[in-house]
Length: 517
Ligand code: HXC
Image (cartoon, rainbow, N blue to C red; front, top):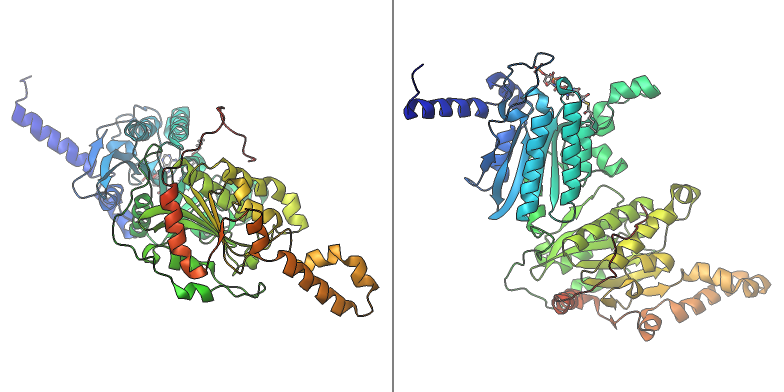
């Protein structure tokens, strides 16, 4: 056989590459696009800076021979991986190709994903995994399970070292759901479903009837399970959310988040004086406060549809990224319950791992009482907040807007949990409990013996409120550093963050603390 010339070899290379670019073939790509989805390669092209993508492993092939796999070509083995830039910053990506055997994960497929992840770790750059897969490649049996094992292990290697973001753009079934679960943020589109066992298996095992969307659609995973962090209408929106999320974050745990330079206005904002009603029974939307203290009202709320009694998200104050945690009096008076505690604690841990300062806005009546909450483990889950805030060594700035009662006051990053700067508005009520409840306990005898019990109760409530339901007692004990006018809040937070920028705090050496999981 004649030796092929360079020209022939280049021609062969081009043809082979072209075949890989065609994924599972024109028909399958057409069908995929017909469902309103971008293809695996289009998703990467939309996510990263134009021309920045350097693919690795495009000629990877499975080596299975059973169940019709012998000689079967699987373009890039069903996953496109490589290095690229998003807004000029290095990232590593993997994007599953549903047109190739349903994006199923075989041995080589998962090895490629794990290798891209290791590149993230070695170069200190975020990892973005676009999921669209029928799960473990059934034809490859335990080799595909082994592949998943490598991916999970590598997810854990990366955890806390580089940010990991999962986009769920199609099916994500069985073990496939556990890689996203090990990442920091999950963005799910309305065309995607995630579950460990699907509707048919559930029907067989428990007899329950449920549709795939009811079980694993984005609404279920936002409101009920709390598994995901963002809902996107489609692939393009998921990609925009991912880009925006990464813009607030450093590339790795050894860097600070990128700081945006510019001219920032910190003049008094008188509108802040009127948002929070002085009557503690009246509700308001804490997001109205957040939007006025951050730059350009630009707030990326995380898990907006889960446990709405607490609001968490990323923003900037005078160019500096912050993680905001705020009680939401517009929902259940902003009470802390199991879901709110878990939601906030996880976010606090993420911010601490990636050097994002914490700004906490407090208006909390307490932990939610109830048999369901106690049996559900509010003690264990509420303790996650105490643990996460106490363990956080990033700058911690707390502003008490109104109520700060009991254990929930402590759990919302009080001074004793290591808040570096604590401020209170004149409306703040820092107390062991609300005046009504306290008066019933402390003055029960006086009230029951009084001729006019109602008048006596009102008098005792007033007396207790006067004594404790204000910020001055706490300021007197140095539990708050200063009492500020609401209008000055943005300036005060900006200044505090500036002065805390160089904060360094060491903790005793140990393998790791034991957060109550
Ligand atoms: C191999 C698969 C596959 C899989 C889909 N395909 N899933 N091939 N292994 N896991 C193939 C199909 O055979 C088909 O090939 C092509 O992908 C497209 O699939 P369709 O079924 O035609 O697409 P659609 O109707 O859109 O349905 C998508 C789906 C369905 C809902 C994902 O394919 C499905 O239910 N797949 C199985 C899901 C599953 O049970 N996964 C769990 C695997 S076990 P052709 O050639 O016809 O186009 C697991 C355990 C891992 O994951 C545990 C790790 C800890």
